[in-house]
Length: 102
Image: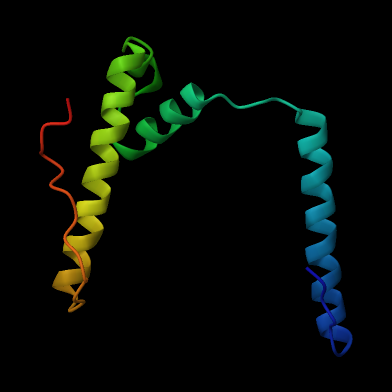
């Protein structure tokens, strides 16, 4: 993304943004660790449904994928419900998060 800041303050802000991006890129190069889908799912479930990482490590891969599918359905339903309560009129219905997923 190219910025064309106008004025001294805008140039200072743009330089801070670029410096932060350079720092982040350097940190990512040093890290150079590939994240697995499994670790991403564990992280999502830990934050999303407040189950400790130690507890989730006891689950099978099948159970983890099932939880992620169910949690995804629930989030879609919850966002839809909140939007409707706020006055939105979505064009389509979301899937029932309590449906049988097996």
